[in-house]
Image 1 (cartoon, helix red, strand yellow):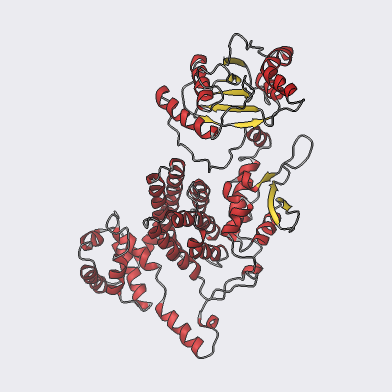
Image 2 (cartoon, rainbow, N blue to C red):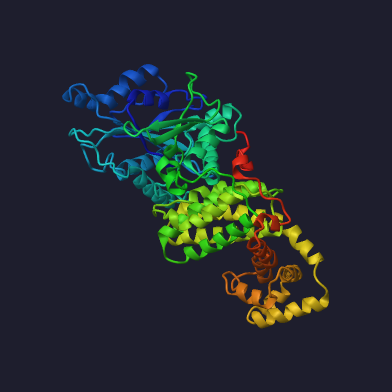
Amino acid sequence: MVPDVSTGSDTRGLIVYLFGPGRRDEHTDPHIVAAWDMAGASDPGRDPAATYSLLAKRLDHHVDLRTRELGGKKPPQHVWHCPVRTAPGDRYLTDAEWAEVARRIVHATGIAPEGDEKACRWIAVRHADDHIHIMATTVRADGRRPRTHRDGQRAQAECRKIEAEFGLRRLKSGDLTAPRTPTSAERAKAERQGQTVTARHWLREQAYAVAAAVHNEADYFTVLQSLGIKVKTRLGPETGDVIGYSLAAPGDTNAAGELVWYGGSKLAPDLSINRLRECLPDQEVADRPRYVADPAEPWRHTTTAIHTAHSVLDSGDDAAAQGYLAAFGDALYNIASATTGPHRAELRAAAMAFNRARRSATRADHQAATALRKAAKELAYASSEPGGLAIALLFATVHLARAAAKWHEQRGHEQQAAAAEEALRHLQAGYQKAAAPVLADLARRAPRAATASRYEQDVRAALPNHADRILTDPAWAALTTTLAHAETAGHNPRRLLAEMGTQRELDSAERPAEVLNWRIAAQPNRRTQAARKRSTVSGTSSLSATPNPPATPVADRSQPDSLRRGR
């Protein structure tokens, strides 16, 4: 059951909507199911005259009295509105049940506490099977305003109790950090225009994807405009600095033909200009071309940073952990941007799902997660996807998403935990699609029996407590190929196995050989590193030491691939 509290100033306009035909003639039987005084709140049905002259007059009566006392000035935002909707799949409630829901909501939110004869006047209107609208004028009979502090949160808490008592689907409680949901009017508009999502939702996803990839505030606005999004900034009167901004989707206009603007904070709390600045580098960061000698480096750096994030979630430093979760949300967008193949859609879905898990009431220490955010931004402009290393990164994201869900669950962040679980499901599906053919190919290229036998001895010596499970894992043959590659790259297999075995997941992993395979695949090539070091010492550019051409500089890339999709 979902309540959605808002305030306004047009009592009669809201009444007209509640008892009118609806925007698509969906209001087939509007009627009052509960009110402050059922005898005094006669039900006008769809009679426009009654709507204006009877009900609106009665509901506005005390506000009008208070208005005269105030010299004709109405209290600001004196109309309180709270639609309450059951979840999809729930049974339909009777009018009597909805009446009980309404009375409990107005009591819990302070609009009309039970037994308070001077409480605000209110009505609850039902014009559909699955929801009601509660409307009140927030002036009490004694002239005071009701105590509605945190009314949205209190309405949610009461709905959780009602769900349990009425046998309805139990929804997750929020903590006031969720983005605003699209209104029914926005959803209807998107449907009329043949869009799968509302303009608000589309703008939010574009803003997140751009913020994840760019290096400074100026680039943020530039890339948004390159996508056709209209940008309007608000400047401070004294300094002339940007103190806020709004976005409008291309072609999204109101009835008057004017663009519909959404402020950054209205799209999501962490898209406000101040929250963005906490995550973006200083403005002094130069927009110079940035070359990467080894195209695999961004993938490897991001994998390492994600492993670090996993450790931070276990550290007890909640501020740092929340900072890493926000940076992980950015990383998911950039991983999807840099990925090719059929699993890319799953990664995009994971990034969108994780948006609710990237913030909570815990204030984030974004500086703690600088390494992950920096690595992810490098990845947004990576020139190629380095095969097994990309899957190793994806494997790491699966484990971090699982850890994020557990972290949120332990702290009572129900909505965030559910969002992390949803992202985990998408990441697991994407990993399976990407990893299965690669593991099969590695197994086909397994080294000869004598080499595999030597690696078996290494496993038993380095990881005696896990050896039997590793050697019977279906991924063992693939691991022998990866060990052979690592040995060719200058690593000692036994020492490498011992080092990888000290890291997390091996004890609880169902397929420990698969875990080791991707950990080892993410290790750098020591011979190549040594060659670059020698080349640098001899005065030769380190770029010439790599057989691959340098990555395309950031300045030459207008935007990451994930940003080139239209609405």
